[in-house]
Amino acid sequence: TAQAIAMGGPGAVFWMWAAALLGMAVKFAEISLSVATRRRDGAGYSGGPMYYIGSLGEKFRPLALMYALLAALSAFLRRPERRGGAAGVGRAAERLVPSMAGLFLLLSLFVLCCHAQALPAALRAIVTGAFSPRTAVSGIGGFGTAQAIQWGLRRGAFSNEAGLGSSAIAHGSAAARSPGEQGLWGIFEVFADTIVICTATALTILCSGVGIPWGSSPGAELLLSAWETCIPAAPAACFMALSLLLFAFTSVLGWALYGTQCVRFLWGEKAAAPYRLCFSLAITVGCLVSLRTVWAAADLLNGLMAIPNFIALFALSGKAAKYAEM
Image (cartoon, rainbow, N blue to C red):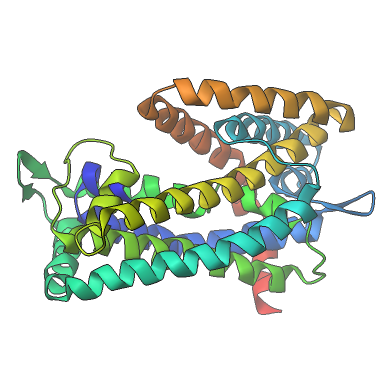
């Protein structure tokens, strides 16, 4: 969210909302199709875009293989899963994420209450910046609608992963029998990720009055500076570090699961252990590579993953619509 604002201006937040509204429908389709086409794998299930892409017929199998390969590569931008599979990842996430998300929101709301007088101006900047041909900001010439749309959609897709098909891999392992019922959780995920968490982050930054490094790629330090306008620096920094640790930990647990499921689809169970080893080695590489390079690689692989996924979603849209009626 901080990067979307710095690179696309306040109007990028509006386009993150727009991406989320479209993403809710996309995520519902991904998850419901994943549940409908999953395969039994030992004591549980395996599902994901590679399975519903493959359900279109043999001529679509290259697309299914392409998706699985790209998803496995994309997972290298995260960290490895611990042993325990989908159930272990689910248990870790359900214990860590709700409590940290709640505390994160409470802290952001406290800062917003301290700067409540700036809220109308922040909302006005988001709306006007989304449609203005050129929005002037301090220090640079300004941002136009094109930049706002570009960065809002890019970071919106990254926040909730709608269109990537990644979370459909995890939902494909769920015990739920109804594709439509499981798909509703996808709608909730997008709403919680982008509409709630990202909006709270954006408004906290914009209302706090902290200096925004326009045209750069800031990290968590921008939100931390916003928190520190109302909260002592030491507690704010400790909570930020803990939030990043736990949010990142659960995120990479999930992506490690996605990558492992994809290599199993490609080469079978024998490929899982070597993949995890390579995944572990990627931690060291990730510590040495610049943030800009990581973002560029993530955007590239996300975009490539979306191509076979959207082809299948369009082809299976009628089937997904039927699940919405159930």
